[in-house]
Length: 503
Image 1 (cartoon, rainbow, N blue to C red):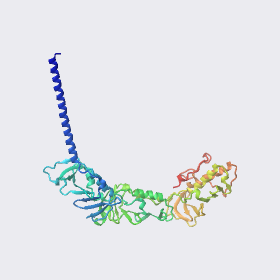
Image 2 (cartoon, rainbow, N blue to C red):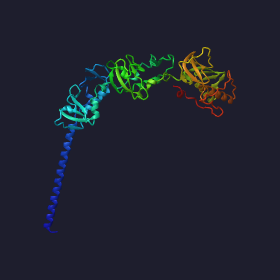
Image 3 (tube, helix red, strand yellow):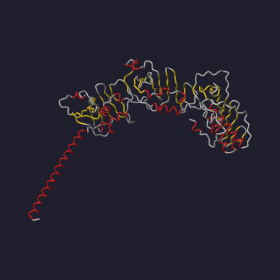
Image 4 (cartoon, rainbow, N blue to C red):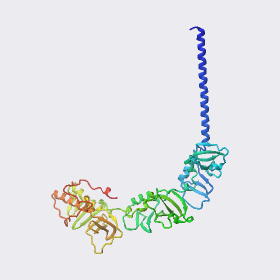
């Protein structure tokens, strides 16, 4: 290739390279300009940027109501000024949410209103929301939602924007959002009394006392209350939320809400205040119903599937066991079932145990386990159902008795009076408990008759002669449960779990 031709090719290549570089520079400049424009537009859509934790005051106003709220030292919000005529508990979580949403509020788009007036966007008489930290204030004007509910129109510095619809709903929430959403406005640990009435009749009434345990006032004042169950009941109740607050009792006709003759009355009380909620009648087909809180007169709407607690029964608050005396706390147990009688003595301190005259502690571990199981079958006898209106004949006599003696010498006697072939009325120290006990509690595979037979068989196999005060009367099995077949059932080698059976 000659020199002239080579020079021409070199010049052409140089021109191409320069053109490519120039084109790249031009594209790069165009891309940068586009990115800068986009960044500027995004910056314009960022309406606020402040620390939400610094906010100590919120002002809210619309055409109907205005509030000034301040943050207290304990982290709760309180109304300091308002023209709202009714008192209510403030939802501090909602106000914290307002601070959070406002602090990083970013619009979805800027609205070119053109020749339109502000009234087209609900901004002629807007809701005004101001967050203040004591030095700086951040004010947002909220209008209407767009027809498609895609945006909520807001105004800042005389410019109109569209923000996320859900965010706008929260910021413009007003009184309904400001009210505490929970039916019971206190925690379960603060509650010291509770009661339910249905159709004017008290279903149950409970209170705590100096021992920090729950005690039943009605319908069974001497009943053994299961405090853990009551606490669980109250925990679930304090989690129930209200759907809305449509009115106040003094301003409406209660008949329209079914509250002129409420069906249920639910009461909870703390050390210094009592809350009484009256519920309108409802059926399984109703999705919601109304209630009124007596002290404030506030009417609320609530989902019926959240208030099933109103159908709670008193027995659900009680221990299912007539007597709760642990094996380790027992000194003696005297048992009579029909024409069978035996006596158990427990001297835990020195490890001495007797079944009538048999020294159980001198025998093998299987017999010792059966001895403890025999006690547990009695201490774990459970109620069947509550029958408060039962009429027990004066001449009726118990056919089964269980006399418990505790380590401190306290005696407690459980007596069973036959109600029919399968049920007994349960008596404690001669007083009717209001409950029945089923025969199978005595004759089932884990019943006292079965385990007495097991321990006597084990004694016989060990070559020990034992004759109780009376012999076992073979029980007729309930229709619901057949009597155990002791010939095919293996002897237990483990102690019956007192924890799994007891409450």
